[in-house]
Image (cartoon, rainbow, N blue to C red; front, side, top):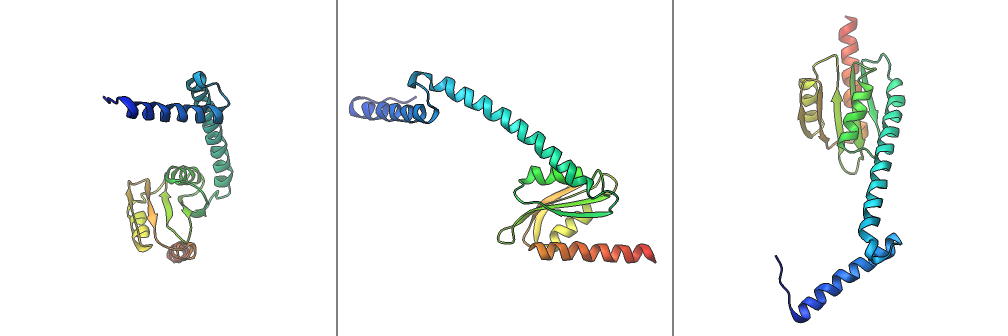
Length: 171
């Protein structure tokens, strides 16, 4: 509950009026119709968000299909949040035994998700994240976190693992 009187009340209401006028201008709506305009904008935003998610899922499927039959698939994709990294890893995990997806930059940190439907990756993922100076955790099918490593360091780490795994399988 807020109580204002006199000049304070006038300034308060003038500020509210100014805000509504600005919203009205931005939305090209009459001032008494700004709430309806915002609701319409919100509905349109939700539709576009749903559409973008559906398109992203299709793109992820196309990317994932390129990893068919691989044991360890390592993929870098710019501009993904943590959920996107996990979703792409799950998509690739449909085609490869183990999927590693990273998103970020050498100037900051990389988000990483290590996923498998076929293997328990909890220890493997936690070791990888720790070895790459990161933090994270997860369950047997997925480990997710952030790593303070460059793309080259991440690629080298997993290439080394692939080479040692291939050597061990060939013996």
